[in-house]
Image (cartoon, rainbow, N blue to C red; front, side, top):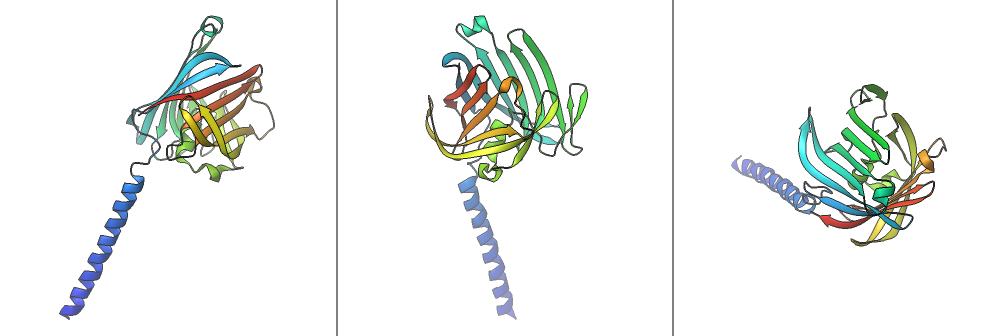
Length: 250
């Protein structure tokens, strides 16, 4: 009887040790490989039709709580420089609060100043009831609806290949738009921050309509643990606006 008890105790103890070791190894391998941490700042050079036009940044400000949601507070800034600043001044600030588990937006505040155009918009997402409150208007949304800017972080956490030929829902001009996702693999981006092997995502509208100003979007994510958005290319009616990663501060 005593031997049976000892054998049972030994098996249970061994099992617990194995579970602990597995958890420890998992933590060591993946615990520090999350694609985002507070303080990370991505600096970009922006050019339009080959002319150096602006500087931009994506910064993870802090981790906080909104209601019951744990979120990352992220800020995007873009400011024109040089001759462009006199011809068409840009001074944009977009704050995003992304769920730390899903990287979907919980709240967005946009303050846009582009030439004579000014706009201030706040969006609150209610994921349980599938609606968004845009200033004082209510909009019905899909389960995973987000904004174009949150895509830069959503795909840093997601397995990009799983979204190949899938669809995604975005809020654009107070409406939801369904997009097909085109994914291209193993493309090379040469940017000031270095040379990266990337996966490129190109959203296309399912209704075959053009985006505003006939825009087309490509985002190149590095094929490493961090999945940095190293190059963002926006094709407009009169040329390309290109953001290239210049520096990483972590």
